[in-house]
Image 1 (cartoon, rainbow, N blue to C red):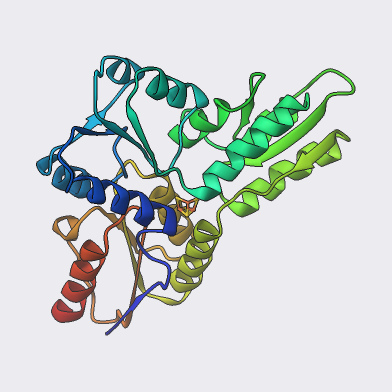
Image 2 (image 1 turned 90 degrees about the vertical axis):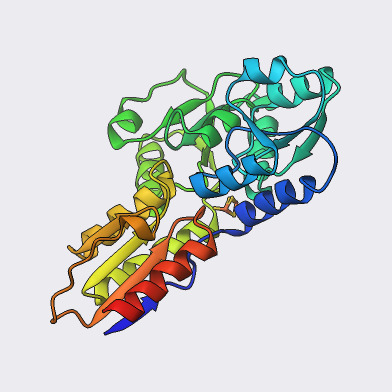
Amino acid sequence: MEVILAKSSGFCFGVKRAVEKVYEQTDKDKAIYTYGPIIHNEEVVKDLEQKGVKVLDTKEDLEALKEGSVVIRSHGVAKEIYDIIEQKGLECIDATCPFVKRIHNIVQKESENGNQIIIIGNDGHPEVEGIKGWSKTPAIVIESAQEANDFTCLEGTKLCIVSQTTFNYKKFQDLVEIFQKKGYDIIVANTICNATEERQKEAIELAAKVDVMIVIGGTHSSNTRKLYELCKSKCENTYYIQTLADLQLELPNSVELVGITAGASTPNKIIEEVQNYVRINF
Ligand code: F3S
């Protein structure tokens, strides 16, 4: 039996950078907080906790701080959060992924120009909440074809469409097409991150040729969930696990090829463990 690991598995550039930034801070003698868990991976968050890094869950938690350093995670945050950090005299360690920062800049500029911001993404996702917080006027989040079809605005309104970085590329194109067909004056910024596109493409290709596919990632990670859905559509025997402990595989003899991929917040260590386990045991 052969095990193939998808090339783009695990930490993407932005997450790697953010996690490294927090670890760098743990050497210094000061209080360190992350605004929300640094990544959707309980193992990493627990390890950091042991090194004294505390997670701020809400804006109120942040407002209650008197001193220390606050790390902004790769998802980014609304402008308001930077303002609070500054007003309170706290140190800001900005680990916003540059690709997300680019969306903030577009949204800020285009909303200042009077354009209506449309975010193609999952409402309530922290990245989307952060993006909303850079628009001068209320941004509208569109997730489905139904919502795109139902959308209306005043005549003459110019739209600026951006996307959550982890949104499915095909779905994004379909939704943009709906807006285009309606004849709106639109600026489209495809802000889907290549890391996600690559990861999804490689995972789909791999899932289509293997007998069993294993997707590793945190249960709260939306990009891992999407990977799982895409793989499942190509390979019926697709399993979603968080760590090696969740893997309960009974592989029939007919299984020749096993594929593995992992979400953007899955540490290398976990991927290697799963890979080695499958190689040795089957
Ligand atoms: Fe950044 Fe793309 Fe990762 S936007 S955080 S490199 S998925």
